[in-house]
Image (cartoon, rainbow, N blue to C red; front, top):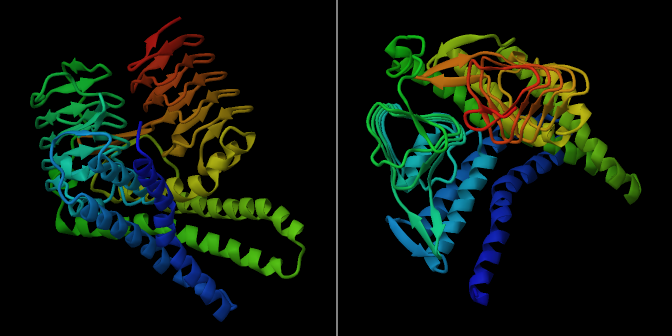
Amino acid sequence: MWSFGYGLLFAIGVFLYPLLIEGAVFPGMLLMEQLDYIDSYYWWLLYAPVVGIGIVLGICIEVAFFKWLLLPRIHEGSFPVRSWFYYRKWFLGHMMEVSLEVLGTLYSTLYLKPWFRLLGAHIGRGSEISTVRHVEPEMLVAGDACFLADDVMIGTPRVEGGEIAIGYVHVGDKTFVGNSALVPQGKVLGSGVLIGCLSTTPQTNPIQDGTSWFGSPSLLLPRRQQAEHFAESRTYAPPRHLILIRYCIEFFRVTLPCTLFVATATMLMNITDMIQDTTPLWFQVAMLPPLYLGFGALGFLAVIGCKWLLVGRYAASNHPLWCNFVWRTELVTGIYENFGVYFFLDLLRGTPFIAWPLKLLGMKIGRRCYIDSSWYTEFDCIRLGDEAALNEDANLQTHLFEDRVMKVDGVTVGKRCTVGLKTTVLYGTALGDDAALGDLSLLMKGESLPAGTRWQGTPARRLA
């Protein structure tokens, strides 16, 4: 039995999470409201970028402050779950998760590495860190020019027998860890290693240089497809002017979603404030849902405009990491995921209405489709047949980074096809009519599923 005092500590922690987010968000929102009272011509909306930057900096400072206040140094080992150490680790772990949800645009940019280093991570030159999860930055030792892709789980602690085990993860030079892969604590990845999408590491430790692994449990791949060759200056050794241009573009990737949120939310508050003095309470309450949906739709139109203005129409292509196409499409993805999805599109998941905004972004969607996912990037490369079903968080992955080359290609889902819960379909694939891909599965790039067949697993294997 856990003591009353220990339980009280957790209750305080649960109370503090939203309070800390409010502490970073609401001062700027209140400033916008004050400026509204001073200026009735809406010039105060020009302050939205300042408030958006303030939100990003505020949360970064809060996380760093509590990290060095509560756990200035972490050591490898096992610690009791019922301990002061575990409570501090739990609190900071949740703060990192909150930062990933609120500061999603900071991840995958050059601005992430200085912040991670401030939190204690050891990251080599030229490394790319995307949306890593469940990571204790101080336990991460990454070499030069490595690549940690989206939703990678690095050094996840293990709780067993009433104790939590924590250990370093060493990632060698030019090692690639694919989307949603798991690298447990204590692992040492050699140089030039590849861990595939939705895969985990083998039991051996350390993992030999230059080897490639895929699946769960993982299997050794004897060889892997080579990416199209681009000059080193566009992949691993960019000149200074490209680094500067990327910093400039990614500044807007980090700040623009927060800016759009601040401007939209403040306008919503402004309209609500205007009607409260002239209408009865029941009318004010009744107006809140349509007002929110209206401003959400207006904000999503801004996302659609950014997509067509900055990128235009996506098509099958290859691009080196250090080129403006990659930075522009990542900017669009950041605005879409961290503003459009959270503020509006997630409300429409599983309803017939979600097809409309996705079609405006360029997706080809047939009649009577069921869509319970918002995991899309290159919208024009996706084609859904009539009555296709995408279950919760199904991921149609129309691009991958391979050897620092972004490869883009299409995904075709035929009529009456089913894609399971949290299943990933890689680019260059096609599902024939009436095919079904089960939950937590992975369809490898370039594969086609025959019509009427059923598949399951990572990688997908035929069941019927």
